[in-house]
Length: 385
Image 1 (cartoon, one colour):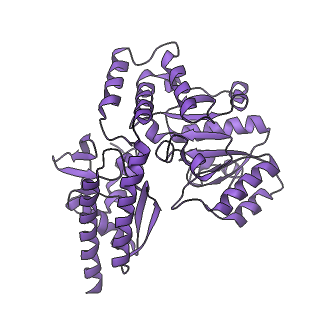
Image 2: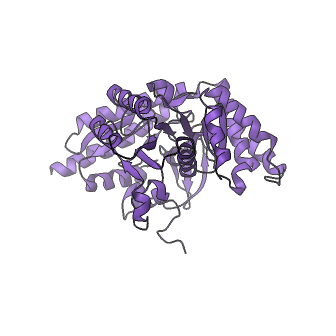
Image 3: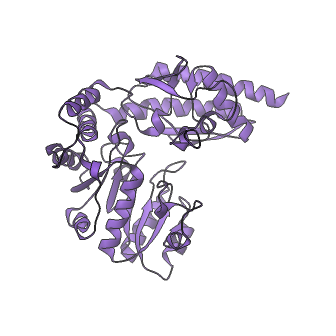
């Protein structure tokens, strides 16, 4: 009934674990950093819903806020008071977001940011780096018209020469849309080149903080690394599992949204706004980002030790402390790693980011590392025989 097995391709069992075996296929419940599959088996999870959950599944503060929103009617003909309140909270958390618009998904929000940039700049062309979702604006997939692809040029992350070539293109550029972290932190020269391109060409910087927003601190990667961003896009951790994303920037710039048409029926439903409000309140009173950084460092350090001890099957550790993964030597090793961890009660994403959360303790991280280390050691032995 569902072509491709699931509506979220990155959650397909083959993407997580490879084909075959007795790996989990569908889940029935999640709590903290644990999930249960349809056979009743419990797993420690390090994917955290592809990074969409930073407080832990079913966090009580978020759940209570969401229940009240449901009781209050979920959605209505007028925008809720909560919309303005959450916008104010975001502005207090991340001062660059003086003015905010809400959306349901990260891909939708980044597309809206590009629309705003095009209106403000009076230009069409964009340059991108990283992954901004599946929508036509950012995709080269089959079915995307050539005319749409022609309006965008993609450059590799941290590649200063490629960026300079792209920005030297004859057609003026409306926006540079960039993920701040891709398989590792941004180089200083990369940030300097982006900031210089912005100042020199007038192109707006759209910082795609879908993965890094809140997770890397209240002001995210922009403040940590020093990006001169014009628009910031947030998602994932903002809703702790509920569908909400946001675009924010200076009030004068964001007024460009009133000169075009960006609107969706459920952008202002109560439930996800209530979840975001609760998430921001938890971040205000607890050092969530500090905890994620600490357990993430413990996790990534452990993976580095595993990689160093078994270089025949593991090439390196990619990412940063807050989200990282093992780069496997071959697809076969990658597949067996994911399946092997699942067989031992751990959902460990192969060749893609694993995320830490407030729900992961040092003891949980150590348990995961013991499982991953044991599986990798067994794979290394198999490869040697």
